[in-house]
Image (cartoon, rainbow, N blue to C red):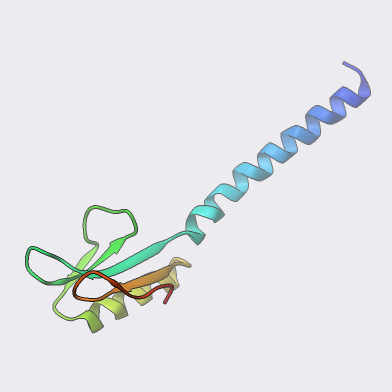
Length: 93
C-alpha cells in the first residue's frame, strides 16, 4: 500500500466514525409524541410516534398535553396533538 492509499483509507475510516457518531443525534431529534384519544374507552393517550402502546393515559386532553410537553422537553422532541376525531389539531407543538 502506498502513502496515498493509506491516507485515503484513514480518511474513509474517519468519515465512517463521524457517521456512526451522528446516528444517535438523528434519532433523538426525530422523537415525536402524539396526543390522541383511545378508541376503546375515550381516554386521552400519549404515544411515541409509531408506537403501539400508550405511554400514559389521561382523563383530559389538557393533562395529556402537559405530560407530552414535559417528555418532549426532556428528550429534545416535539408533540403532535390530535382532535377527538383523530384529525391533527396542532403539529410540532
